[in-house]
Length: 168
Image 1 (spheres, rainbow, N blue to C red):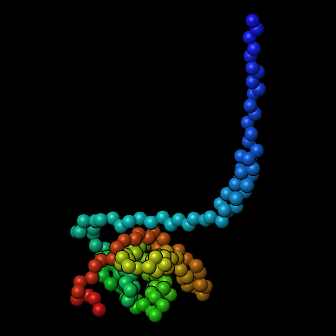
Image 2: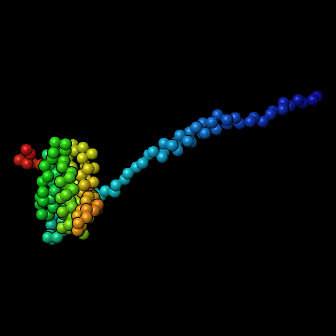
Image 3: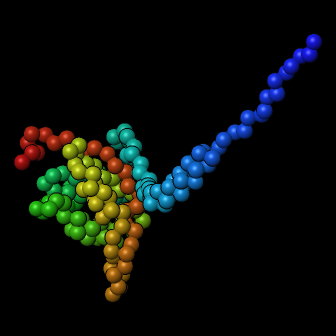
């Protein structure tokens, strides 16, 4: 008796639809990747130093900028308040802050550190504007106005809580 075997043809893989998908998907992903840009600013959190461990020096500026709704309080952690810049109707007076940062940089040219302390309800845009004014600005050298790096090493943190007597 004769045994009959069925001949099975090998199946061909149909990948045309997959190739069409890739042809459309790759240019789309490449075109959207071109428009995506990330800006990263390296920040450090302020260190928690034990009180009394630092030696107090006259030339040792520890710059702090406290962002409050009614004013920007620029101060030295050791020496106290340097200036209080009242806010305008549009928000904090960034131009006055930038001028003050330029004056402080001419007085302390080797200092690069600053701390920005903000209250919890402070707008993100306000914090960024303050950080930009602290980080770089315009300085006068001789008779020329130059764009200069002021205090590029910025630490951020929470503003100290005011007591009831400190609130207006």
